[in-house]
Image 1 (cartoon, rainbow, N blue to C red):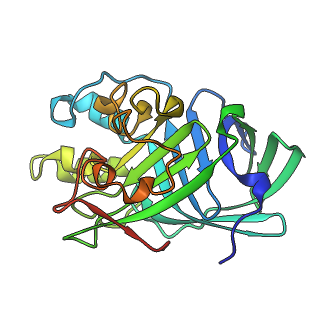
Image 2: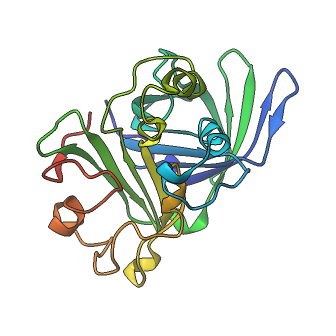
Length: 258
């Protein structure tokens, strides 16, 4: 699979989605970070949640978590058709393809349209996301079912990691929450992390601005001593042993793109 064109690189913020049914959304915080091959996409509804650990959230707050979305993997582009191959997903895997027709209004504004015309989305590239752009796929040292990635674009980062316990396929996380009531700890359903933020050229800790784990918001992903522009940043033991809320046994190791 070839690298994507340079015009796609950086962080794109969604300004609007308009469905053919008439429903629209401009309030959900949606960020798509695209590197030459790897991507991450995080979608947090506008209703804010307190910065609490998953175990401390009440039933209504856990239900609100079910509306979050996030996924990461590899992007494939053929002409103006873009397909995002999801290798990890916050929602249960349902077999649907993620594919759209892309049109650049200019270098910083992009329109995505469904192949069946059921929706269109307006994307705007964040200026501070231009510059060095790269990503690294990660696997657990002692558990190769644990997958993650760290993506960098300009001043921004996105870290993604799948759940310690895999989630069975299904239609929506709401269904999994209902099924787990009184049988398992519901917090295990929500331990898929996608955390997005800025590192400010390494001058301050890598601040998480939004995350699928509400307790991570405002925290640091990595210490300021980790230089995001260092050639060997992905080989840095401080990164591989500490990044993420649910670190696999033995930490992470660098792996080829999936």
